[in-house]
Amino acid sequence: MTLRDLFNQVSSNYWPLASYFILLPLIAWIVGQTATGSRDVKFWGIIYAIIVYAVCIPGIFAVTLNIYLFLFERQSIWQANIIMQFLPVISMVLTLMLIKQKIPFSLIPGFGKLSGFLTLITAMIGMMWFVDRIHLVAFTYVPFAYIVIGFVGTLLLIRFAWSKLF
Image 1 (cartoon, rainbow, N blue to C red):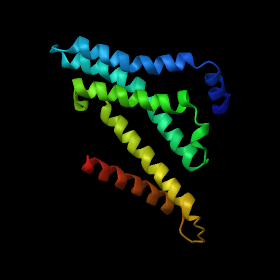
Image 2: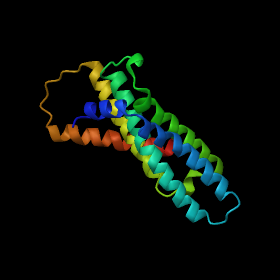
Image 3: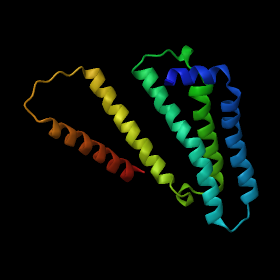
Image 4: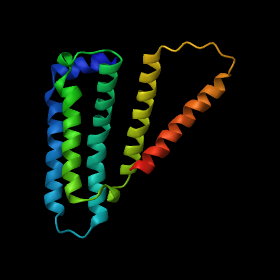
């Protein structure tokens, strides 16, 4: 099964996926109402972590897929699949906004890992787009290992700069 086959299958029966992404912000709101006034921050932090991972992993995938399709595949916005490409992002943003109102992200276990992962993906896509656009052809005697080390070094530098920025 290819990714296109999966998209076609979900597009033909979209209600389970749409229900999932509609329910996640609702669950975050219900948990927020239930947790109001509770002093067990660790327990609610774990519950919010489960919700964050349930919404952010598909949301990050959808953002990455959208960037790839629009930048590299030159897909028209008119051909975008609303359920597969936009609903996860909208659900992610809405859920994170609801959670942010109730608890700081620093109290949610593993939230920093998601932002680091998103930073890494963004840096890699940005570098790939830059290389794709400049059409650089180079004949060099530099060993390939040095090029890989330079690429990894650039990623580490971007990650360090991002952590200092936020």
